Every structure is written in structure tokens, then in C-alpha cells.
Image (cartoon, rainbow, N blue to C red; front, top):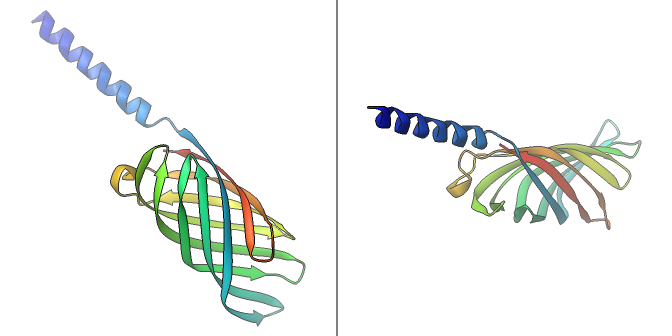
Length: 154
């Protein structure tokens, strides 16, 4: 009976250790490069609203190419901007593979930009994995950019 109780306690402890480890955030860092093209534009109240197609290639702990078709970029007369987008792509995060949905939003001034991102709705080995973090970068030409992301895998 003591052996069964000891075995039960050992298995329960291993189970709790596994659950505790799974809930500990893991750092995710990567760099990105990308480019875009303008699909449509219009001017409203002095702001220029652009719909753009992006292609963003991630390298590092996060790997894959995100191609979005829904980015909204608003250019303000003072040189500032706001943007938001969503894309789904095949990704490799810390050696695990699957398809994920990336959402991001941010703002910029001049050539520099920054914002927040989330990676959710994973499939394959990335099911139930979420990444949240921040990004920053700058334009390297009129239609290309580069930067880095820093986040936590939950």
C-alpha cells in the first residue's frame, strides 16, 4: 500500500511540475525584413489612408513569411502614422511548426515605427501556443523595412 501511495505521489508531483513548466513564459526574439505595395489610397481630413500588401520574413526564434492582404496604414500630415494588420502563415516558433495568425498594430514617426503583436490560433505543433510582444523597426527604402520582435510564448 505504501508503494502505491508513493507511486501516486510521485506521478502527481511530475504532473504538477509539467503543468507549472508549461505555464512559464518562454522568451521569443526574432528579426524581420519586408516590403509592401500600395493596393489603394484615398485622402480624408488631411490624412492619407492606404491599403497595402505586405510580405514580412521572420528569422530567429520565430521563422516564416507572413503575407497579409488587409493592412491599413494611415499617414498623418504631421509625419506620423498608424497601422494594423492580420495574416495567417506557416511558422516555426522555437522549433515547433504549424500555421498561426499574427495580428499587429503600431505607429510611427518619420522612418521609425513600433507596436504590439500577438500570435494566436496555432495549428499543428503550435496548437494552444500564443506569443505576445512588441516590435520596432525602420524603413530601409520607400517600400522596404526591417526590425526586431521581442515577446513571450505562453
